Length: 245
Image 1 (cartoon, one colour):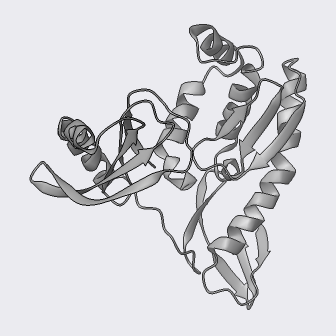
Image 2 (cartoon, one colour):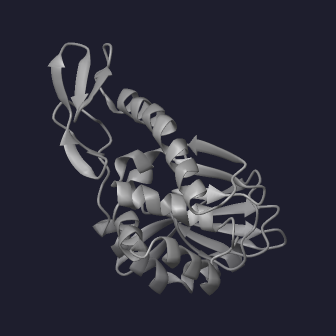
């Protein structure tokens, strides 16, 4: 997950990396620093990347000196984010036989009952000759989510008298779901890895955006009315956000 400190939120375009190797001293350690010019940025933006390096976006008209001074003023913030990064659970990159995969809220082992075949809970997955099973298993779970999540959303929409124009299942990297002004709701396929009460909460959260397209107190009142235990689901999502990466 990208951790950032932002003053204004520019829309991204093609950035220009400034070839200036540098480093910041943060809490007794040296943190690599990169300065990146962005023609449409309006403010300086400091971001801590997953590899532990820092990056400053330099807005149009900004200077490299001002960008570095900006970063130096934020070393306390960087130290806090580095500590969070160090304690963040690591996502297992390769999925092998015996790897535990989160599925419907449970960690289940990948079993191999026969050559070219995997078992995840009650699901049987053909693998071919793959050595790292992550891509094939994720593809299978994506398809499973595409079959299960839209009907569940439409069921809850009918139950709560909410109109929806379109439902899609996507490979989102930073959110569990989204709702557009036109009534299109997108859900992250990884919700198939969550418990049912959590995926239902995300669906209800997005459906309530059809009533309030914001996160105002009134919106959260709508959420609480249809999902009283939403705080518990929010906590699960926060604790398992690493699976989005």
